[in-house]
Image 1 (tube, rainbow, N blue to C red):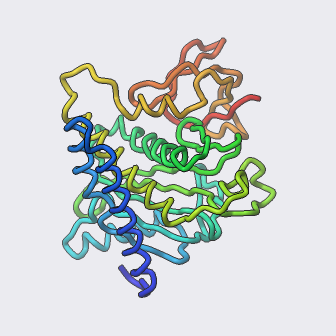
Image 2 (image 1 turned 180 degrees about the horizontal axis):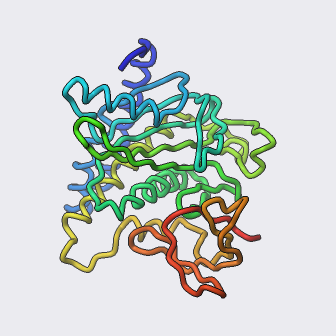
Image 3 (image 1 turned 90 degrees about the vertical axis):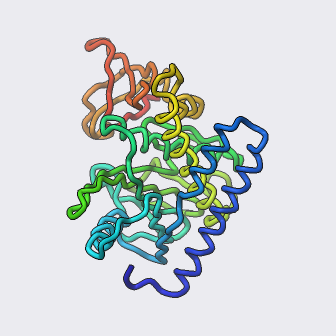
Amino acid sequence: MKNIEFNQVEKAEKLIKLIKHFNIRDFELNNGLKDVKKIILKRAAGFAKSIYYFNRASRLMEIARTNIIEFEESGKDMASGAIFFAEELIEAKGRLKRKWWSPKGGIYACIVIYPQLDRENWGLYSLLTGLSIAEVLREWGLDVKIRWINDILLNSKKICGVLTEGFTSPIHNQPYILLGMGLNVNISEFPEYLPYASSISKETSQIFPEMFLAAHIFSRIGFNIAMLHNWLYECLDVETENPIIKNWRLFTDSIGKKIHFGLDAEVNPEITNAIVQDIDEDGALIIFDEQKGELKINYGEIRYIE
């Protein structure tokens, strides 16, 4: 990794220690539960062993892809669970190349993982990332909701988004999932072109410790990935509900909502005035449209109709 300053190394080491703290805390909290929970926690312990910390960066997904290639050129593979973290981004983008406002005061990260699910179920990684963030924010006392797929809303304002990209390395032909997240924590002002964006501090009038919050979220993402993979390995021949889907339903307010849907639901919706019925086991949304009937959608976005 090039151009990493000493203070960034110190911050990365601090973040790793904080993630370990939350891993140990969760293990102790769950010590009296079933053995399967202990297995999941042990599997999650291998997550976030490598963190690349930037005071300021351009776009973390591009940096992650570049470094995956550099690893392969040196005869290595990047570890699954590696995290690229920045205090500030200058070229961040969301879906459809929408600009993401990302000054200091947010949590910006790209998490690199090896997918262990079939390709048609890769959307579950995106789903569990949003779920993990929502779970932690609820534990921090915030009444957040998830809007499918993984927009985090507080007081009906968007405070977090997740962007998932697939990447196959050119030398080893290794598939990766890049999980990008941007969480607005202590940002006080937003540009006029983002009327529905907000931050935790703006909605609560409180300041939150960004690094502690980030560490807790990363710890939970690692746990939920381990839980998903454990379900995959242990429950293939058993009728057991996907735990990510089960928990996601507890945090969403999408079910029952009237929505617009489309690749760009804000500007050019493909379906209007549909009703969200449920979420399928692969993370796809099930909606009902009066003209087209029941539909299963696994791309695009939704916007609520007030």
